[in-house]
Length: 406
Image 1 (spheres, rainbow, N blue to C red):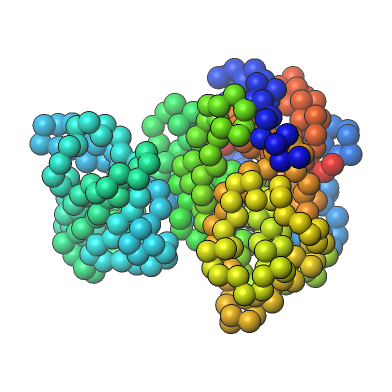
Image 2 (image 1 turned 180 degrees about the vertical axis):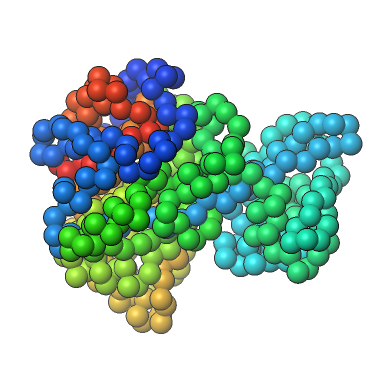
């Protein structure tokens, strides 16, 4: 069966998306965005602030609490050439929190723009940080695929790398917006519940939430929980192969608190996921549980979910059995959080285990995220997207929302 999944043709997941339908800026009021509701085969629409009307009492909503970092750093060489360094993930130290606390050195895996103009030597730039003049240097190291190790050093040990990014960096908005980052993006391209720094792109389904919507959900008796997936630049990588088998999914880092897993278990191992990043984290949790159920003492590196791993994992476990195995692993090792990584790809034919409904924006044609939606609601994805195109919905990161309940 896995071979059939791998031969899915991307041209079957194409649709016309005029540039004018891509939202270049968010609405002034986050929760006034339109919301398409797909429920058991029927399609309707509402405004996002009405979301609590559609979520039943006693349900569990899980959010990705990652925070977008100002990951783009610009340097000018003495020749005037502009070099852009895009921080992707920490290398030394290789933990996000530790890297942000580092001073006066750290190393990251980075994409480099205008690479041909940076053959050797250090790049440097001076700015005022916390009232003191700080000079930041960047030295390019070895190539790793399409990215490079970059060592950052600065001349003030009282300044952390978090401070460096805050003052030297620029928020990376999606490339398909075709515009420069504006000061307003620093607020509008973050969810109201973002807290754990590490993403280079926002979990955009969460951008529609406001404190008022969250309060209304809680007042109705809906449980709210959090997990973390740091969104990588690979989320924007187009699928260039004719079949999905030719596409390599990017690795993303996840962190799930034991309390969240226990809350999931209290809800029968099922929940409503806010955004595709939450979906990928939750479904990865199930497959990690399958590994731990069979091998309770699995090594840390065995908990990484590889791209096609979910399509060949006997035996079949219930969500409660799989999540219980994860919780028991954390208890045995006296861990409060599960910290690991995933490359999971969700394509038509995949069977969802934990996610019973999802809130998500409208995704690009021929993308892995569109495949994920199709895996959830089947061929009805075409009806959903045709409706959205015919009824004035705004698409992609700053666009409108959908609530999918198969």
